[in-house]
Image: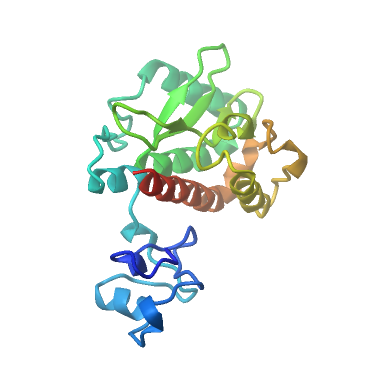
Length: 234
């Protein structure tokens, strides 16, 4: 949440955890209703940890629309969005089913979640058809493409592409890439070395088998962080 009390509606901007910022103060230290109570009175739901309901949060594309940006909207997954190339998408799924069938459900759930967050899927052109969950946190005339992962269905790895993120705001900041690394490392089966914050470390794709929900939470943070950066750049 914004720590600037003079900004209109600053109490509505939650941090990347979906929580009220502990540094938030009303203007002139005025004695007003706590921001969480004010948001709840407006219909925002919070869990017992003080996190706003994820379904009530804005995606990067939605935020861009509210800011008056001309952002192309992605089609919902049913089962393959119109904008996705069906041939490589099918190759990716077939290769994943052949080599890592136990991970198919988890990977599919995660990629569907990514689409619903306003992202889309791009695919590689090599014999092993890689998949890149991509987000455009820019506008139609000034794209700002980024992708946190590259999935390889034959070798069975998921690369975290710090090498590319270091050239893309806000992940050009080392602290943001470190935050991504630390969040992923909390998931059982992922151990990314901090020394590789400018490289492409990987973890086994089988981690998606039992931990897709936790990976989705990290991707949710990634999208929300990109959305906040878009608002600052607007």
